[in-house]
Image (tube, rainbow, N blue to C red; front, side):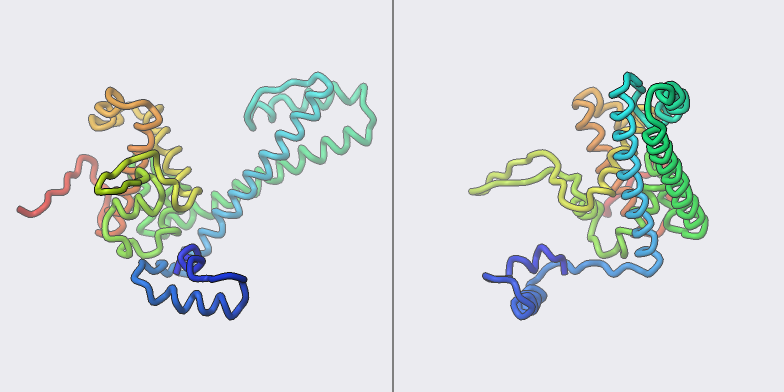
Length: 266
């Protein structure tokens, strides 16, 4: 049972007794239950969370180090690779005019960044090893725009794909379908709902953007969309299509086929 559904039945002050009553009332309502994950899926999901935290901490450390060196006139380009190329010469130049204790502190901070790089690479290596053993990951990684991180995260988060009735329901669970409001029989469509796991939705959006910018032949559907819609709308639409394709491959236990068209029975 999702916790947000239970919250609606918790009246007044929070207590153990009130929480138990709210859960008892909530589970009696007709709603979709949370899919049970396997131990391996939960373990892979935890590795993704650890990697996400390391990337955030590394970004904070990089921004802090770049800002401190900028105070002494050492401006460097954006990005991890630009910092890695410029930091040795920058520390050598400021070493002549700054106290040794500060230089040692800056070098220690740079060492922490390199250590986090190694930890991130180690987690990705372990995910790559799991990909070789898991049939579902190997199946959906063939989808254009789905890489190692997206494939492993999708398989770990979806649990049982048959818990969703359709690909659109899975896309709605991820939060890449239009938000709907309306009254009096009139339905209004807005931007994407963003209801669901932010991490998986971000991976799908980045994968779709990579297809649009790097793929030599993104396909006729994408080319037609690019003529009619703004770039960000095309990216979101392609991410939605990727999510539906992921569900179809996992739910029907089949390999990805480029150009496959599903035909409804007459």
